[in-house]
Image (cartoon, rainbow, N blue to C red; front, side, top):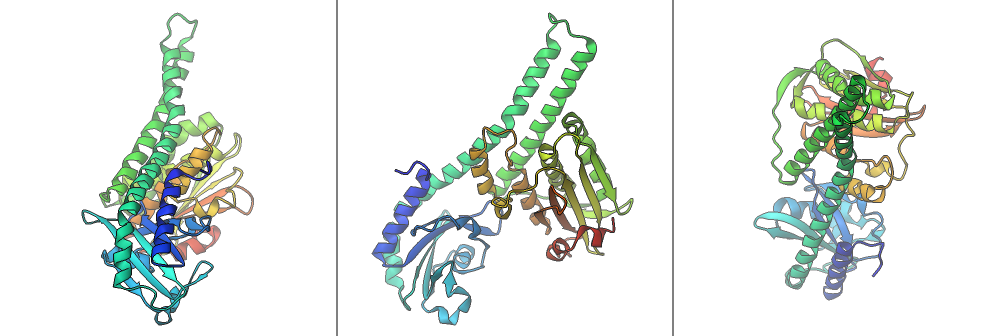
Length: 396
């Protein structure tokens, strides 16, 4: 067994290869519901082309697998000449497609898709053949689900270990009456323990939102609030962390009052995740700057700029993918700064509001995260906002 390939992926590929041989088919893949509602993502393929699977993430009803996931029905395309958008998937020419949803008590657990370069390759008999392999695939999928959550929990445990140790250590120092510790030193220990405890509260909120999204029961409490006040509150809560890191926090506001409609607690969490991440990656003596302003009558944009090393080209396309983030956490457990899971959670929350969150490297160095939010749920045009330059629309 190849130690570099996870066991759950090996089992899934084995089931898909068996299915490809029995139909027969050129390829077979399996996609599962993404943690972000409304999306599915490919997790395994019967071919030896798994490296690009992170890119195979699409909305429900977008493509054959998305249609099967949205409706819970088997979808057969006998000839893609009727559907030109499906003639090629990746590097393979596709002529006929079959997508089969895997259900568990009415919940879609995954969608198996088989493809062939031959026209009319699949029929109702193909569905019967596929059904004979389903128990094997469902068992493999259960293993994969446990592995995915295991990776997430391992990343969360890694992120929590440092602040837990800090709280314990600083409180021990503060409470040690046998040591020759001055009142000022004890106060500083308590202050540092408070910073670490704040990080734990931050991670606990992330964990709650991830679990809510996984159960598809995230509830947003919408109200109209002042985004400027929200920004100032969020930055004030992060100021102790920034001070300890030696990273000045700055903000630039287009106007003094800027009303926004949404779940204030969740939008503040998005901002806190972005700024917290920026502080973590910015060297002491360099700064993090938050810009807040109106793009137009319908859209508000918030930009977080840091002066750190920037984003790796290899990670940039997948930066907001929770599963990719979990894998990164596993690979970087020994490093001082893992990428963390806050970015994935931030984008999920942004999209739940009808907004969008994007990332890029700044021309002068460092990373830039851009959050576009509709002023009202009646207006959601994040793509236009994300494509404009900061100076153009915010006039900073």
